[in-house]
Length: 303
Image 1 (cartoon, helix red, strand yellow):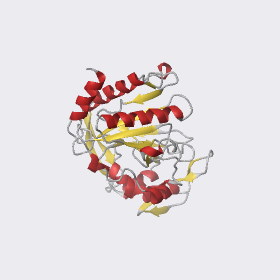
Image 2 (tube, rainbow, N blue to C red):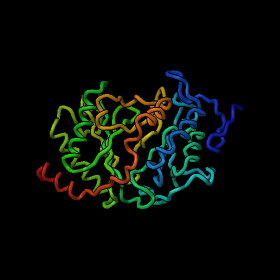
Image 3 (cartoon, rainbow, N blue to C red):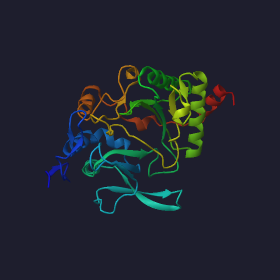
Image 4 (cartoon, rainbow, N blue to C red):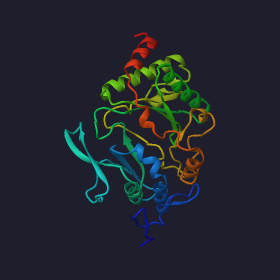
């Protein structure tokens, strides 16, 4: 039957089931649930009110996985739902929002390793309060992706935008610009594409916006396509389905050159928080408009 434990008042069945292994230290479902409980205070401000897509691994990271958007009917009442429109199918559905510690822990019990959050909240699903630039290296090594990430931060500063950076827990870094929800996704996506084009024009040997891997060569891919309705990004402190259970960790801009994308794991993230704090704490206070940045970007791009 497997071990059953309670963590944050949530029952964890088959708690001794290994989700991560054999490459790297074994991580059980109970380990994942305890991590979620420990990290919840820091993570919840980045997930509250946001619909999520659940990336589930019922047999661990070496088994089959699936994405689940619709909130299952059997999920308990403490798991909050957000009603969203499925534009491609002209219907609505309920999706999970991680609004409390119990939900985060319950998702661990459901073998949801990574929740992928929307860039908008239930307050206004049509208007994002985040703009994400995902820097994805095409070839091994960190020098190129670190240079590219620094370039994104420098352009943000030129445009008068306050930007934050984190590891993805995978291959690269995310740069996030907190926004006031003044504009719809079409406007924000257009700005993001222009932003990326200006960067590529500055260093075509380093950067590309080519979505197809065959066209990227050895350049770093500037992925801004997720800045659209119903698209998602991995939130801070989320666990990734990779050996060792790495997590997406907020860092300072000074750390881009020293912290690797998979450096922090569920075994070290809580300790990191205690010693360094959370560079993204209180990020909502930094929400900003895009109007002035749009004007400055137009001048830079010559449009």
